[in-house]
Image (cartoon, rainbow, N blue to C red; front, side, top):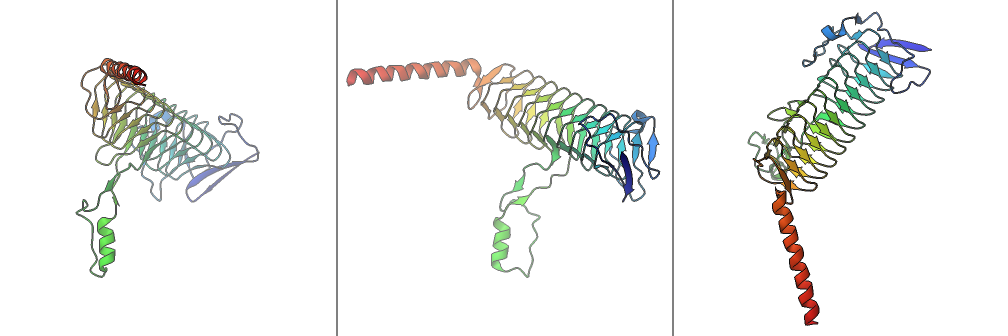
Length: 319
């Protein structure tokens, strides 16, 4: 038993039965207030969202499936064969290509563009974001939220003062952190995979980008304005600082980090828990903190171990 309702420019689907993540038994046809398109691939732009207007029409491609309490906002477009799980949300004006799949509670937020065959697992969320064809976001992954940027006291020359403020209020305003505007986008390339709990921040002075076929493990953080190349692998807990750049085929081990504004050349491999504090310009393996060529790091570790053994031997003889 399926019920379709339309109100406030949104399309809502409710059912008495709980659907699975990829339901196949209930087909939701758009009500008369929306327009259905059989040629969804041609009708759904992949890189330009549709800004919602009071007269915007919601467009659902053929054979779209909406789970219970799924909501599609006014002016949004879903490509043919798209599937929304229970409680999934597509914001007004957002675009999803053909065969997009949003799991329970997944959210395609404002100014979102999802390409064809994109999969967003339960509670994944994007906004201000372009997601390329075939990309996968696992549970609780997110992209397009504000980056972490603040003016330090005295840095913001645009801070306004009010003549009516007393000295204490002016001093608090002068010494308080103030958020920097984060107004640009995050761009996820085709074939990318973003692991559970990972995050890609939107840009402040340039778009944050992941190249095609790049893979992020769980709990990976990519800071605002970062540029990550194609076919990059970032293992669990890795962190890429704001405005950093990684070339193609870079590999970062678990909990490795690249500082803000640093650059790592194509083909470099950074060992687990290494910290990149300056540019890496030559392909190869790097380890340690600060990160140095791995062979040099291994020699330093071996030398230190020998020194400790010798020191221990001398201490035993003295006793």
